[in-house]
Length: 97
Image (cartoon, rainbow, N blue to C red; front, side, top):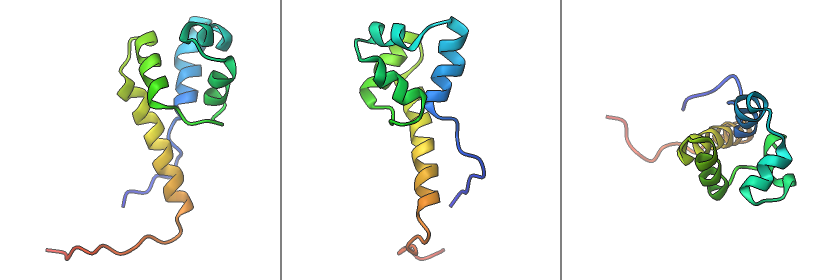
């Protein structure tokens, strides 16, 4: 198992630092553009909510990226948190060659 020392960059941090700030775009403006409540964007930016597949598709279309870009960032964070939470993993059932 690969262990990460540093938490991966969240999709919320990417959204804020790589898109919203450089574009001088407010969370409320993005929410209006995406057709969602501003609280949805705020929870993603502040890492209080995970990014959904639907939001990944919307962000991909909005910022000319792929949904995979956003979902891969979320998956990296989710796996990091899961590995941190689990104290002991089950042994493999497969025999080593």
